[in-house]
Length: 116
Image (cartoon, rainbow, N blue to C red; front, side, top):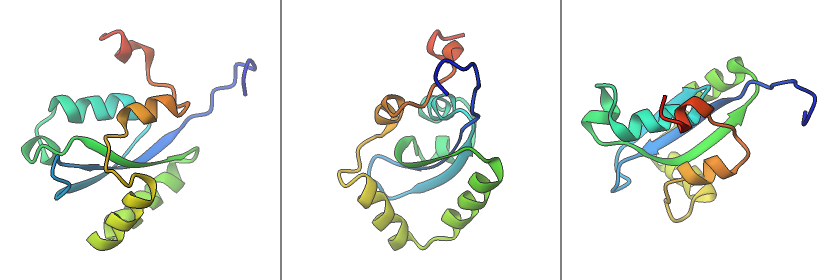
């Protein structure tokens, strides 16, 4: 609520792709800005760093961790063709939605923006 001082926690389920849109990674985060930055910069060793999967092609926002975790598990079970269909409905050009995400009203952690 604007101006009320009440902060609603948000959870994001997202799909990342490599630059050729061949490899997918599905994840869940309560700070999509920070998490996507970590993927882009290859900060942690793992799947996304190894296969250069850093382009945000799809995301959904939830206020409940339980709902977000359930959705993440469902998306991970989707067949590849279904994932492509869902991604193309939201993002027909397969653009990196990282900046669209920032403009969507989701508030990234200010410390991350300052590089702390």
